[in-house]
Image (cartoon, rainbow, N blue to C red; front, side, top):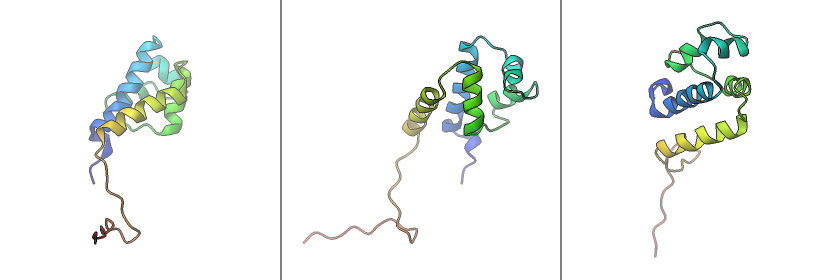
Length: 102
């Protein structure tokens, strides 16, 4: 499995964090302080050295005065457009067998 931190989809999350921080007019240090984290916390997220989970993303949105629900929905839409569609898998771990037409 590919490490998600190095995918285009993960970069969409990072891009979202960068965009909302800049829109709020905050420096990385200011945003880190606003969420009660160490000064390099945001820099590590923005450079892809640190993952950001959903709870942290909500905190970052709130610190930037951005609606978390809207921001997460926008990021999710972008990620879904990048991911390949998967075929359904049965409980046995295999794609379902197509029934022959008669």
